[in-house]
Length: 129
Image 1: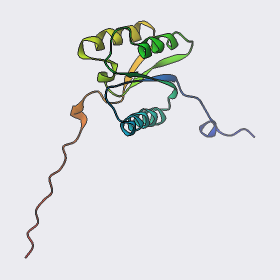
Image 2 (image 1 turned 180 degrees about the horizontal axis):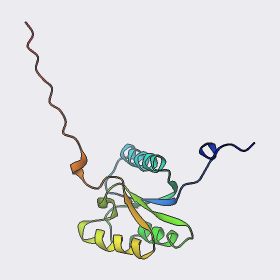
Image 3 (image 1 turned 60 degrees about the vertical axis):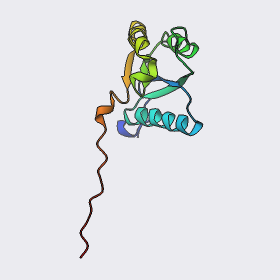
């Protein structure tokens, strides 16, 4: 007897990750990669690769060019980035977003902006008799 659908291993839509790292420690890089991986797992996406840009971002950045190349492959759903900041400096983000969409891929941002964060509560002082 075949296992029910929910118990079968099913591949989710294929996505590629993109990170832009400037002066980032190895520990920070690992944490960012874990965040992308967790997001993909949570949303049942297959993270097929990760392109990492190091240093400042220019329009001809090699990791972004490589990303555009893989978006031409069949059955690629989209690109996952932590925030729009990871696409590049402010002036480059719009252009890169357009190029991703022109390739027929979707841009998925793990965090849309910083306003989603909850404020850190301040400790309450308790009166001790």
